[in-house]
Length: 255
Image 1 (cartoon, rainbow, N blue to C red):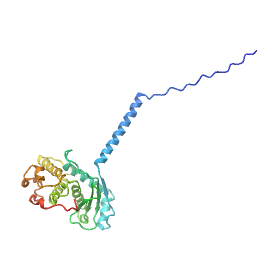
Image 2: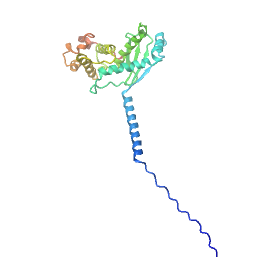
Image 3: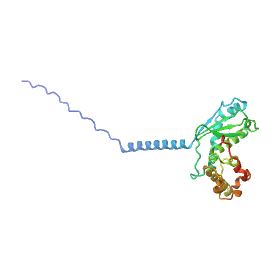
Image 4: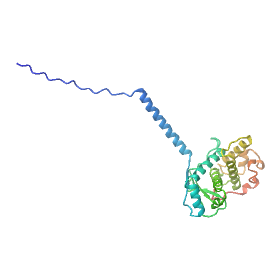
């Protein structure tokens, strides 16, 4: 009897052991995740601190509006001026966290159809935190149109960021503060405080602005500056007669 060949017996296949991530690879992925998460959080923080800028090109078809569109809108210069002016104003009005920042979510800028009483007029938008800045066509008639538009935008942006005593702050005081902020911006692009006097003046302006976050009252200037009304905030004296400010209140239709 012949021996039958033995059938080969295949050894049972076993699944390879599950690979486990090496420690360096895991730590590298973890670091990447943490970096991306930090970047996302920082981007959200920056977005919350910023505001939208809308520059309307075709709001008016006047020659001044067309020239404004050509020189300042098409190249993004108008938006950059709004941003730089906002940064300069912030350095004076909000020097640290003890000065609550006014909630501004959007600034809409355009050239008005007709000449305005002022070079720039600021009004509230449709929603809280939205503001409309209208420039008078006369700004485009200046010999130095670049400086004219920049100055008008500085005034408009300064007015946007000023508190107004819940609509009751005297117009003359607000105009004086705008004039001060605009003069500071024109005098120094960095608003550097090289003297104690300059620093003290800017701090008084910031304190008055902070006080105007609340509803206006006649003692607000005295409380903010710690001086009698006739001596209060001397930085404003060349610009406004403080004895008359309580008789001049902003119209309800503008800010």
